[in-house]
Image (cartoon, rainbow, N blue to C red; front, side, top):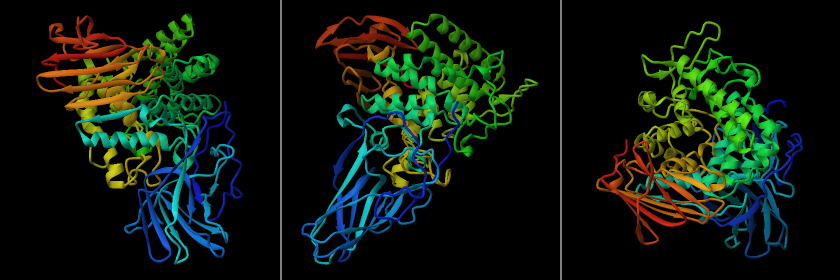
Length: 611
């Protein structure tokens, strides 16, 4: 097994061209998705003094700059160009933004008798694990703002263009609107983050490190599926990890999750078949106790992480090797491996993984649950079996998110999870929100999605001023955070998967589940990408009526969960004609109706109120 990738930090260089002289050769990459360049113009461009200009592109992307003058310069002209993610108080780029927020000042020369110059950022990596740009690509950096000084006083207004690099992205493949403008704002922030951070053709850990990590990539993968029918970047990132695992225990256990998500969403099983043996190695059976609990470790490689940064662990008791978090991930990876084996036709393997999953689930519930308090504790002493006295958000939200909590315990565990608020990182928010929606706590989940305090997505855009999701909630929680981290874009997958409830249940979207949990929203509408074409869903609701209009492309059949257990209240219209409301089953207080390709309208009077 290869050594874990090291953490990186980058230094900016004030030079006129790309230079790697001070750093090592970039890490080798077997394959990456194709990337393209797109051009855009500032949304605002103003003169600053006699020889300067300031430009705002509206959002940050990873790119480089092209400056064109209306007339050729008479002599060589030296320009000072500043690029950055953060604006100063005046019309200028913040030259000291703090943390890992990007700024770079470059000197470039416009040769005499020419009108155009390219301004390419420069990088000097400190370590060898970073991923370099695709062959033939300019270097890029994330920036929104541009400041230019040094133009001749009599020069006219320059044409300033940003050239951004990203994987091909279909903006029309997805959309979301609802009765709450704040949630729409969160959606836009997160959707743009997925496109903007795809500049390397692999999912990487923001600009501060530019290396792939499994947990980051899994969130990025789900988010990408929620905003575009693009599956290559996720697949190649997953295959990269099979040769280059990183250091956290739980990160490695994301590998089977990535493989299963690739198959489920894309319908392409070639990668999963080719790498089956490597994938199942990531369930780490050598770390499994006889009772099914997982033996982690607090030192060495791999080692347990729980959450990152460390202060985001909600006081987790890290003393013990047997932790609820790592055991929960072990159960989830076993569950994914059982599904993978079954899809591969390896029924014996599937049965074994399913049995191991059941044993781990049983052990978690027998040995890590405190019945007196109705919560899961953080872990137990491997030698004595004595449970930790501490119960964290993480030890409870992960069993909830992974379906490990017995039905009669869900209410108590969900109550505890709600009581902790957002006591986790932007990464942990993935599993917190998944668990809340699955437990029927959509009201609380929606409140977290639209929170205006400093542990929410609106804080990133409104208060901090970033247009790409942050690495952490705020610099006070992680002083070296960067402003371009896709693992902070969780709502880009939670809104389509959980709030609107669209998830494939057969590979390639042959069959999907539609289980909207729109809480207090009066209206919500989404266009969801799929390999078979877009899926359109609009949900409206009031105290007296609930209505869903679902448009399915050819080849897709849906199970729609309608919020009532009373069949007589359900009305179905297909192709403009009333149809029989054939109920497949009653599931968690909902009538489950089948919808076929085309438009189906399902309505119910006096729906079940959101919890």
